[in-house]
Length: 76
Image (cartoon, rainbow, N blue to C red; front, side, top):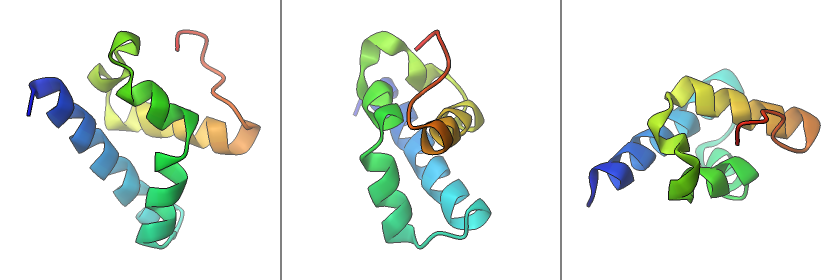
């Protein structure tokens, strides 16, 4: 597993945990929502460099997507 893949995995784990704790979601529901999100797609796209950002930053993007239906940050 490459360093990049490891960083992505850590971010994914952190976000799932944040969703279960902060949003009081069941683990399966949190996984389903995140894995089916635009943010997850961008995280998997190496060209965005999103995997280099903090878990908190990616989580904020995900919350924006959930609230507004899309990512609102222009740099993605």
